[in-house]
Image (cartoon, rainbow over all chains, first blue to last red):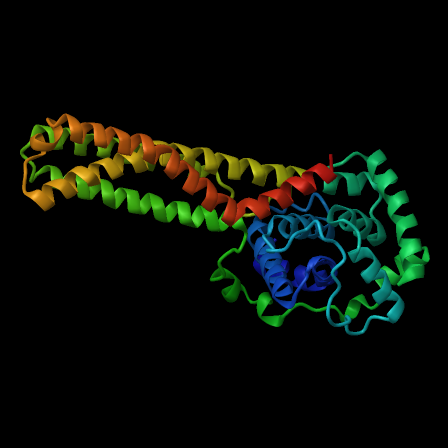
Length: 153
Length: 201
């Protein structure tokens, strides 16, 4: 893939980065760092992208691996921070879903975002590094949690 | 498609990244903020510093006539060369970027292992290099301040005992200070990485 093709693919799939950043960033500075680092890591590693997987799957892997290994100077045990401002163009209901997901532990946010994006349990398991059975169990539990949370928020 | 999926997929066409991030020239000059990338850059700087220090010690050898000082400086050079070689081997092992071929869990484990590798190298340095360098500094300082020859210091049992005590005290102190610094700089990050691994296990 040429540099030009890579940048155009990245542009076409930038919503993936955008969504993940909004699920994990706890401040404006965090958001900026995450955007920058994910794009930088994608740019550094795209020469090794052989097209075995879909570009979107590859970008999900880069984004999640970057977000989790980036030092965000916050205690990840305290879940549930929400962005100070809403996400432009997104409905109230959609915003509520994002808020609800942000109250989950960070690894569960990754699982549910991949699931909602349409990946099956095997694919989610491969990206996250857990078995499809565990993915199924986690998704079942997360969906129940989200239903309760969406009633409360 | 359920309600949740519909909500998740809503309005994705409005999601855009900052425009400057799509510029390859901008990306080429951007330093990574990944803690391991920073660690690697710092490791490179300390290797370069160790090379200059070893060269300076080697230069000093030409001006020394006392066999004791030559022996001491020679030992320091050997320690420095060892630091440079092991530091360089570690530098080559540390990742420069994330690995998309890894799953998230593998990537987290890889980062934790890399930090542990770096820390084990740092422990060796704090236990052997710092105390030896401090002892050498003690002798050189003594020579410079009093004008005595090194033999004067190294044949006095009290000074030798003091030197020994200094090394014995400095070893745990250097280790403790290094550990404190390490925890201050990377402790929270490592705890977060380990917690995420635990959640996935």
